[in-house]
Image (tube, rainbow, N blue to C red; front, side, top):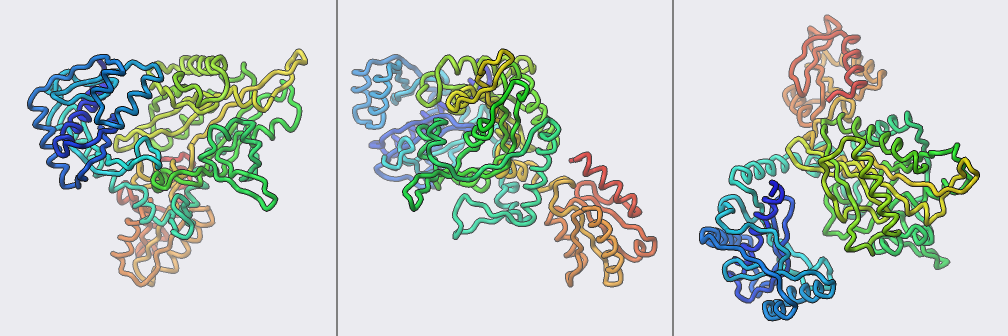
Length: 583
């Protein structure tokens, strides 16, 4: 058993222990589900007397009592009839029991102490294998049964769980650091974006400073794509529903669309993705094999009707700015095109200190093929191609992302660890054999025959909003010089030094350095503190000596006092740091 499986089993066992504590608190409680999460577990309940956050300590006490009893976990296959007898008083379990039976799944029940649960397994064999001080219950939330607002609202209790107390402590320390780095907090402090009740949740408004960040990041991605032969295209933000009916998105994705009905009673949709539009640019003109590949790039917003409870700062929004690109190529060109994208991803993320990216092979779930477009033969072809590319790239230790594919094809998803140890899904490369078939996208091959092309979808940042939420927290708001909305603060010590400070400011601005001249009625100490609060990379302090020598004294946010420099030395230093995109 590997470490991940062992931790999963520990966390799953804690979910059962929580259910036992809930039953002790309320003998008439109805049980929902209790899955494992990335950092622990949760369980959904329908209580007859609702617990409060203060009750979580008593739940923990009960769980530790059960742990210390060294209870044995046993499991067995059951028939539907046995399940009906076991869970007759548990309506949610009965619903799952009959559903699983109809789907032909093997039914299993696991017993811990005197508590039996309908469960597919994955536990420790004895509670002596879990540490009573390696978990904590964290919060209570509401959750509709099976995420359907037509169903009853249940009480969800969350917990963290690890193998040891030390690991739990390290995780809680990381969470405290994460609070300090929360992009919603830093975004407000640094004046990057705002939200307005009149505009609506999930619709961030970008200030001048925030817009500088967005444009610099997008320019960086474009500079790399341009060198590889990508061309910019532009599409509208709405479309007739027929476009998404042809692509297959309307049937699979309709609930997530913002729909618009015109005065002539025609139905349009706000685009939730760009690929169907881009197919129409490709299809507008006949293509020869000599024209292939065609590479389109566009940074544009898409719109998805997320539930309000799922919206969170920049991480989950309604208006999503994608640095999107689509490559239309022949099958024998897939490898070269995917590796071009892969190289760009590696270079982009290394710039921010994300090295050693992990790869997730996001494939379809064969048990729920109805979620996807196309045939099993087409999916096998696409997934085999992805696996072959990963092998050629030297990727052997990848994450199996069963069920994580897009509706039209498998993906290579890239996973990074940020500066405080959290995993973040970042870029993606998607291989699509299905939409070209749906739209009849072809080129004429060397024999003069029509040949169906392949689409590769690629987003380097994924979405600018989500990427900025990651990067703000990863850097703690301390942007490198090339990216910082304000690159240099100039602080004249007194009024007599202002004229020279203004002269230095003008010279820097002529070289496209973003400068803030700190000239106001505040004390010198307060102005210096304000520079630190704004996390400006460099500060130039100007007093009598600097004016007399026609030099500047430079201080670094990250490295402290650097010393006196001439203007030419200063400009050379900044130019190199910006060109190198130094961190």
